[in-house]
Image (cartoon, rainbow, N blue to C red):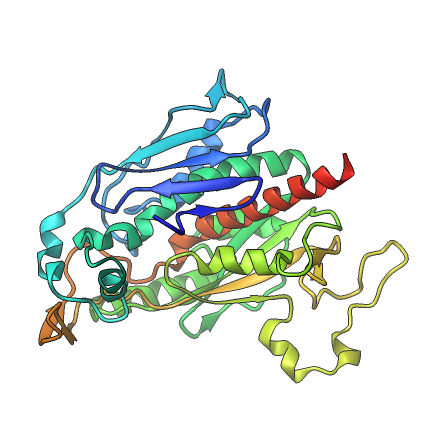
Length: 356
């Protein structure tokens, strides 16, 4: 399937459908000799796992990863790392109505138009279940980057109209992870959780935003002209299910600023007084924290009756069934971190290849 691979030196290919036997992947390019912490890796999978709280889908999956190759005695071999995560709690009957009908704003229609066939159970390949593989690969990349002093923190900073406006620092990570919505404010977390619960009672869904801050990235990562670092990060984020927007640094707010306001002035150590550039200038990292935001739309499957069409383009009524997230954003935090890690490690290795 074209489009199932990502990266250059660090290359991830994924496979599997939502209601198939397993989800898995092959991760290539990981250098040999790195000792992996499998407990830490599992923690990232648990952060993405369904059923972790009352405000997410209640599908029950243990999401225990099985490594098939590329690791021996807890260390990477430098060869392709093959892995899979079994699907354990499919309820395919919940999706029987979708065999011939298309959910509005979902991938049902477009997959059918492209391939002439599709797995309607849980969305098949278009399901966010596919992101399990990304989290496994990204967790490995994060551990390698951590050994190089690079830290990646993502957190929820908006659900619906509720927005966190504080100043981020890595010390807030524990606080954000202590809330079910993964926002660094206990007061706001309560309001966001209440909002998600209300939306769920209405049979509806709601969107939000994730912010990601990457610290410790050295200056010089990135490629001119088409493979700019922020372009690759944007591609990575926009490949995640339900993502509708990506902005870095000042983002869309920059259109209201003058150049004299927006320019990041240098300090004597080569850093900058401000970080409107979001840590990237000319497509290349400048040594400042990389800071970007990712917008997620409301989940397309809602528990309300909607008018749609079937495969014969006839009008039909359709109401969502099964177990779905009323807001996907809290579970998407480790996915954002994973994709960011894959990009940064890939570009780190590319840059080092120039220096050898």
